[in-house]
Image (cartoon, rainbow, N blue to C red; front, side, top):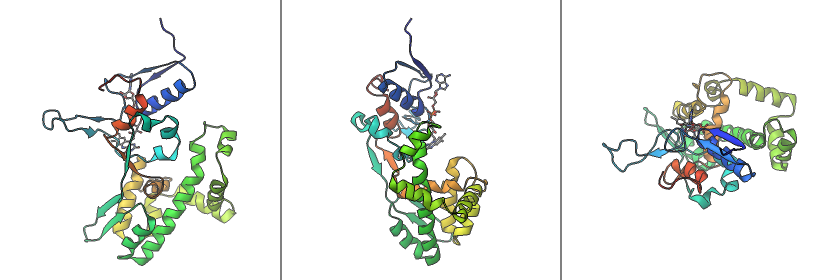
Length: 258
Ligand SMILES: Cc1cc2nc3c(=O)[nH]c(=O)nc-3n(C[C@H](O)[C@H](O)[C@H](O)COP(=O)(O)OP(=O)(O)OC[C@H]3O[C@@H](n4cnc5c(N)ncnc54)[C@H](O)[C@@H]3O)c2cc1C
């Protein structure tokens, strides 16, 4: 019987990435998947073969954001195995029943120009809102990209710019208390504090709820990073669908044709 250093159950993208890093580190890995297709919730499949033969759908995940905050794409050389991104711009369009609409571009300035047509005050507040969440996001990325609890690795991930970002949201008691208060509040309360216009608050609340809770959920104002990421780190769609990610991680070991 063949022995393995590690057995992973489930070839969703987390299982795939974990297996790829373990293999890179020289461990032998057995990755077990109950479906015939790896990828878990990150697949693109012909879901309606009778009604729409040849058409492939992302069954769950569609947008790629968090992957751009870490080194996975580069470290696993996913482009070499077929991963290719298209970066959307505009990134969000949300028409409102009163005829106004929110149209977000990758550029914050361009987005603010659009908001200013309806509300100059909200346009100014939008720039402040995105700047705050982007600074917070940049200051916590070093924690994402280090092994859990590894203080030395976490500290090592902070360069000067990230330290500046960190101390811009955390430092003096009033700043720290404000951050704590913001993090404890809900996306809905936070949006109501920043903005007046419904056409702007509605799509931002919808995006914040992508963290898996309603916008009224206390302690989840951080859902605002879903909009902040659409401006900065990149909001990509893989050509050939979400399967592009799973397939590129699974290659070159994957069976051909899955
Ligand atoms: C509707 C929906 C939309 C989403 N949209 C996005 C999005 O746009 N962007 C984004 O970044 N994220 C999105 N997500 C979240 C993202 O898809 C998941 O966080 C991610 O796929 C989780 O990956 P995973 O590897 O942890 O688990 P999964 O993808 O759930 O993979 C688990 C795998 O384990 C297998 N498995 C389970 N039990 C066994 C067993 N006993 N034996 C063998 N195999 C087993 C399953 O078949 C599956 O392949 C969305 C999720 C959903 C549900």
